[in-house]
Image (cartoon, rainbow, N blue to C red; front, side):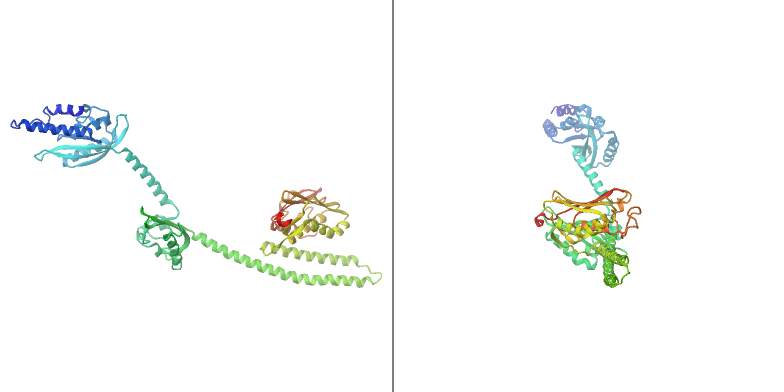
Amino acid sequence: MKNYQEHKKRLKQPHNGKIRTKPDNSEVNEKFENALIESEERFGLMADTAPIMIWISGADQQFFYFNKMWLDFTGRTILDELGNGWFENIHTDDLDNFLKVYTSSFKSQSNFDIELRLKRHDGKYRWIFSRGVTRCLPNGDFAGYLGTAIDITDRKLAEDALRISEEKYRSVVESVREVIFTTDDAGNLTFLNPFWFELTGYEVIHSLGIQLFSYIHAGDKKKSTDEFISIIYRKKPYCLFETRIKTKNGDYKWIVVNARIIFDNSSNIIGTTGTLSDIHEKKLANEELIKAKEKAEESDRLKSAFLAQVSHEIRTPTNIILGYNSLIKEKLNEVKGLDLNNEFATIDTSSRRLLRTIDLILNMSMVQSGTYEIVNEKFDLEKVLIDLLLEFKPIAQKKKIKLSYKNHCKNSFIFADKYTLTQAFQNLIDNAIKFTNKGYVEIISEEKGKNIVLSFIDSGIGISNNYLPELFRPFTQEEIGYSRKFEGNGLGLALTKKYLEINNSSISVKSLKGKGTTFTILLKRHSLKEAK
């Protein structure tokens, strides 16, 4: 009220353009004047208790009234604000615009709205929304403005945050390398980001309002419709499927559709939204891979059939040669003075070597093409190794090599493919004897947790460090040591590694040139329960 009382004193004095000056007409009775003063007092009371800032200006464009809310906000007195004094609190960047709007509105005698920054009592600038409404005297003459002002800083900050968020979202939507779309409840496109043009060649503006399904390949429409129906009836939260979409040049591209339903606040369906991802090149590449795979499989099948046929064609006459070699040897042994044992031994050894080579090539083909059928069974590892040692014993004795086996396993039963493991062990024993000129070949089996560790140790010529990385590659042999002076085709160790992989087992090697080699196998029991 102090603000209004000070203002009322000013009303008693002559003042051009103020809200009221004392009438010159002396005939105005005291009752009317008192009623007017009472009305002004009521206005002042209401203005000072109002929850918004209020200001009044006269026909001379000068401001002559500010309510208590205004003065509390600025922390200034009424005398500081009167006239144009309050301009000092307007942010310098906003003053020119305010004066421009205020002056032009005065000339047109029209209402105006404006936003500006006004300094608060704590020295901080706050965004203010001010509205000026024209005032008129009883005779209709323009008398200035009655204005209100409210602090909209929080709203402005929220708007700025929303604008920044929208700009970021728009930037992402416009730059993302897939189509983002929305449709209405009839399936008509209502939004498309710019990638739509890059994908299809259709302008976004020309595609809006058109059904998405009108771009789908005729052969894919039923499937696509079924997918959308499944989310419309809420059988699943979203649909994800591949389809073909038409491009402007008449071609079709493979895409992945990822879509879900849009609901309003009442859970009514108002449309769909989702993405269209370009997988055309990937799809074509996959189709080429499938064709190449099918071609490779057919090639493997033909190769296996060819090798099987060749094996049969070579094995049959070779067996005949071996048979007749033995028969001829018996007949000629009856002839006195004729010793051809060495010649017959050479024929026998060469024929058996040929048969072994055929078996190795055929087995490698079966393993690499995946046509080998694994047959897991329970068997005693110790018995297999003892049988192999008996088989190789004559060869070892001929070379004067000590061949031995030590079993440190309490339970040597395993559940695995017996044929492939037997072949792997046979290859390792054969190699150890072949490349050992003197000394020993020893096999040791030990338990390691639930697995079995087999070590094949020899005192042979060893393997160079340079060759070790190539050891398990097919058709490779070491130039020095494991050289061509030893018979072999370089398939034995390659097959051994493959056989062990089939049985979920692994092999490693340590060797010192001229000192010997140790192959170590970590053999999985597969199933202890079944191996007991």
